[in-house]
Each structure stands twice: as structure tokens, then as C-alpha cells.
Amino acid sequence: MRTILWAVVLCLFTAPYASADPIRIKDLVEFDGVRANDLVGYGLVVGLNGTGDGLRNSPFTEEMMANLLERLGVNVTGEDFRPKNVAAVFVTAALPPFARAGSQIDVTVSAMGDAKSLLGGTLVMTPLNGADGQIYAVAQGAIIAGGISAEGDAARVVQGVPTSGVIPSGARVEREVEFDFAGLRSLRLALREPDFTTAARIEAAINAQFGRGSALMQDAGTVTLDIGATRLGSPARALSVVENILVEPERRARVVVDQRSGTIVMGEDVRISRVAVAQGNLTLRIEEAPIVVQPNPFTEGETIVVPRSSVDLQTDQGKGLAEVSGGTSLSEVVAGLNALGVAPNDMIDILKSINAAGALHAEFVVN
Image 1 (cartoon, helix red, strand yellow):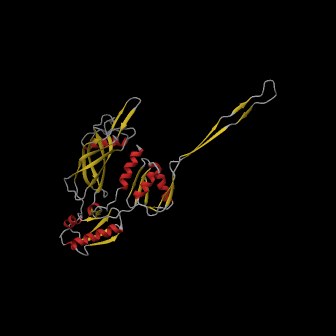
Image 2: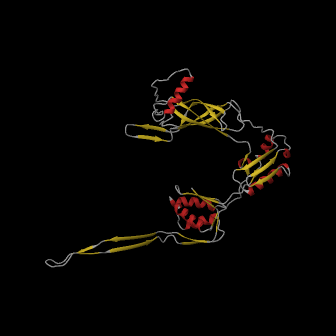
Image 3: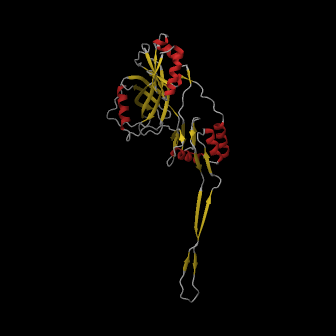
């Protein structure tokens, strides 16, 4: 299996590299002002099959349920009210840009008490607030949970996360975010991965489309677009053209490793300076087998323990010293390590050592 795995990796990385394909600007940047807004609220989930909050550990659930019933005209003050089918939850959502009143958005529901499962529950009408404290949406509906929970007297089985679920289109927008997008005279394009070369290419591509002076690079992460210079009349029309312009982004050389799974991802721009790599195993085994020597009968001798030790030293001769020449590309590095028979976990250690030696010319990320 290991041989097959490395054969596949070698085929992937030793193939001839082609130039990076052009990417749409809309996939490289975020437009200033065109963003989602986070919403949050807390409410009650009812209809649970005995898997709700334990009211001794979650007294706020009882208070919320009592307040809700009082608003509906039911007085439960002084009553021994301890339902098992109710759970207090946090409700979160993202209000998309240009969302209008009456449109629907998805919400996520998560238990905030000690409820065991939200399966089969229904969220009661819950207002969702923005960062400014205003109510922007109201959520309600049946919860779809992705986990399952079952238990007996002495055992319990939980698969997934039954204490969290979603309600597709479960919230209705009641208030719009005030933003005069049509009145903008300039707009900033924020790069998701700031890079001077990529920003310069975006500036050049926009100027080639609309004329010189339409775009100006401010820094590695910002390009300013002059709406008037595009001669399209409105920001919406200008962005509809700009976001579909193709640009070849510049990628930083990067090596990402995940020690838990042994996964290694390396970009094609990774280079390694001249360095020697040795990888092998050393096994030292020491065994003790002492001999007891008894004196002859009817003599005044003493019993003596004679130590006897055996030492065995083994080395793995299959992996020797390899030299990597300067300016080596990724395909040559992988081919060389594969020739040494290096396993993925061993390769991670080798890459760490090469990086520590200053010979790995790439950003080294360890997860």
C-alpha cells in the first residue's frame, strides 16, 4: 500500500508544470461594502423526546419558558413547572449583502444547556440581533440535526453532534442594512491573500479594460476602482464587468504538513538549496542472561552470579545519504525522497530539518 501511495504522489508531482490558469477577480478579492453581517439570538426549542435541558442544571430554561407562556397569556407563577422536552439554544445566522425585507436565510441552532439532543425539535419564534443591537430577522421552524444519540441504563452511544442543527430558510429578514451602494464614486478591492504582484496585475488588467487611471494599487491588499473612469454609470454595472476580468495570481511558495494524518501539500514554486539528507533507523538491543555458579558439595565456597550480556546493533542500510543540488524543484525533491524509500511521516521530519537548516525556500506551515 505504501509503495502504491508513493507511486501516485510521484506521478502527481513529477508531471510537467503548466503556468497557473487565470482566475476571475471576483474569486481573488472582496469588494468593500459587499459583505455579510452576523446575527445572533437565543430562544427555545420545544417538542424534544425527553432530551431537553435538566432544569436543575439550566434554570434559565425554566425562566425563558415561563416568560414565553406569560406573553402568550398563560400564568405559571408558583407552579411546579419542570418540562423535559424544552431546551435553551443559541441561534446564529449570516445576513447576506443586499438582503431585502421578506427574504429568507438559513440559521444554525446550538444547545446552550445540558440538552442531550435537538432531534425532532422545533424552534419557537426567535428574534436575531446584529452587532448594533437591532433586530434584523426572526427565526422559527423545525430543526434538522445531523447526529444521533441512544442510551440505556449503563451505556450511551452518540454519533455526530445531535445538540446542533440547522433550519434551511428558517429566518425571515425584517430589516435591511442601510448602505447607499449606488451612490459610491470609488470602491476598494481587498485581496483575500495580499500580494504586491497580484495587486499590480489586477490594477493592470482593470486599466487595460477601462483605460489608464481606472484602478490604482494602494498596497499589497488593496486596489481602488474609480467608478467614474469606467464610464458605465453605476457601481453595479462596473463591478459586473470587473469581477469577470481574468488575472493570473502570484502564489507564495508554501509547504503545509499535517502531522496527525501524515498529509503533505507542497506548491510548485518550492525550492531547496544544496543540502545532504540521511535517513535511517538504529536499533540497539541488550539482553542479560546471568549464570549462577554453585560451590562443590561439602566445601566452604560461596554461590556466585556471573553476569552474561549480549549486545546486538542493527542499522537500516536501505536509506543512505542523498545530496540535493541547489535550486532543486519540487518534482526532483519528491523523486529523491521516494528513491530513499521515505514514508510520509518520515518526510515531514526531513522537511522540518531542511527548513531548520535554512535550505527550504518556502513558507513552512505545520498543522
